[in-house]
Length: 457
Image (tube, rainbow, N blue to C red; front, side, top):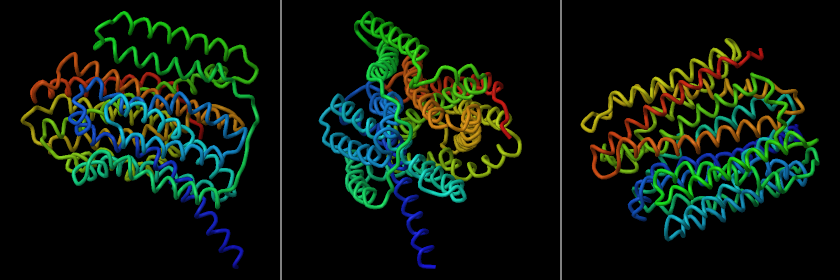
């Protein structure tokens, strides 16, 4: 009986410590959103520049993720997990000490390097450490805690900014990170996977191509010299093509291109890209709109987002069951439609004089849609490959998700400035409505690719 109790305690601690890393990584992409207005005011910067406080983090995670996964599989998952938490914590210190936006962006890149391994390694450690009979429930709890970060992040960020200063959204990571490293080293088991050699050139190509393409898109509308932005974009595309050619010719590629011969795998990933491109554009602008136009303080803005983010915890468990019962294609398509309709309604209904109440139903519809499409597309992508390839397929899925978020934010900023600006409330509202229209259309575009999805039941 005592041995069984000790085993249960050990399993509980493994779940807590792996979920903590995932929670920290997810929350830091969200907690900045309600602090964005305070950061923009403090540093006297434009929305175009502010986007990099969010984009630098997401781009870095997406670009470095596959490299981090390979390192963990080769030299130890727990070791890389703890190194990731340490780098993330160090980056948080630099973020809190940032004196200008450029320093903050560099610090967010450091945070992103650490976060890039926290999510995949925590999932791998949890999956490897627990018996098959406990994995399903544990992974469900792990996913739920990650989803909880989407709810807690904006609200907690708003509370911290309202009561303290925006720098404290980063300081809180420090004690949590140090405790997590200490306990993980003592409690979490070590494990390894395949020992494929990590290609330095491939790693550099995917990092610079990803960051360069998004940077050039965001700068080409604002830069004094559009030639430089265009040249960087072209060079980044060349690097991306070079990376793809190398992957095609390598025996053990970082991204096996054979996966993309499957319409199910390709469609699921592209639909995921568009799903999160739409979502992150809204994540970036919604808190700013609530504060600039709605005149809410940071805490109130964080709470007003809850009809959108709160649906993730309420709907996600039912969405998972619905996917099992009705299939991935139907639930993914319906989810993309609902998210798109929600954002389009925001674009149509919101004015500079309108009440916040008019936003509640559109936000809830969009949240329900995201809660449905997310797990459906993930199951479709992972079900399109054989079981031995799930690790790499999961990494590719997350790269599409994160890159979609980064590119979606950039496109939304471009659209915002095309139709509005930050000069006054009326201009901000015009830009916000255009950005919401763009987000809605991106979500609806995903339907074209969700039709490629095949049910794996």
